[in-house]
Length: 394
Image 1 (cartoon, rainbow, N blue to C red):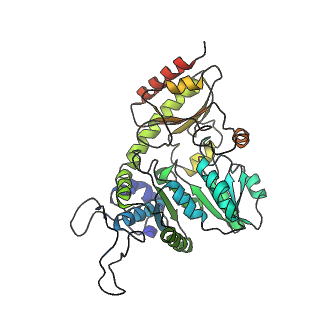
Image 2: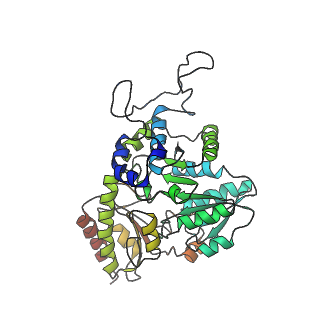
Image 3: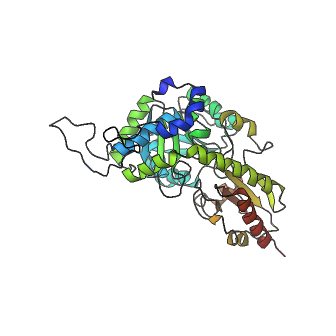
């Protein structure tokens, strides 16, 4: 399907079908309905200087290409790129910048993004500024001639902070900077940042895109052909490409994205209502609650709240005992799989962020992040009830 032929109402109406038949649909040669896994490193060429579109699988592979075309269509971009991890995807995007450039990052950005900027790119002269990107005036005040990009997560990890992507994109564009949005929590099913003015979208496809906790992958989409050409060069030059079988796993996972997300959201809303009323919770972060900060902005730019919930456990409860007593829900890193996962951001996903910065932005030591899976919703709540009952201090 040609990107420019799909209007917004059409895309919403046919998104489920696009997930199944978008991109490169099946295999023309054999009639296979599933794109084959092309496990080859190289390709036989017709003659000197002439090949059938592929030379070497780092540069291009048919299975990876099918995934890249599909994610491009789903995000309504000009080009898509598949990488060996979400961090490889972020790294490739950061390589677009040069020494002396500065980027603005959300104050509760994913810990891995902070780490690669602070411990790797800073050594090569790429600097960063931390800002509350939900505060438009604060972001605007940080712009000067050296700001090359704003990196935004909305909802952000782990406090589900909402940023007005359209307004941030307008400010960045006015100042000659790029807007980069990590869309991992939302997926293109719920939010399409390029349509809101962003220049680049990043996914940790390990999460909802794959959806089954069985693959590590990253995706990048841009709507700008010049940026696309530079990313294609960087992908090939640095070589952090997604292998064919992993690409196939993502293609398979994407087929059920809308079905899974609908169930994830149904469960998350049910769980959030339970947590909101529980005396063991002093504060809940979930964009599906009407009185949550940024609710109206999120509702305007996204189709649903997603399935990530964070909450602060009351001091009347022992957090270690709480984690010891979740049974159906697994204590573990990551998110977005069919199974429910719970984590402790301060010691896990955001441990690389200095404690003083964590405290400043509200990542409390009693903060718990819950990725709500697609199990029976009452079973998830029963598991939480049991953990709460065991964790209450005598």
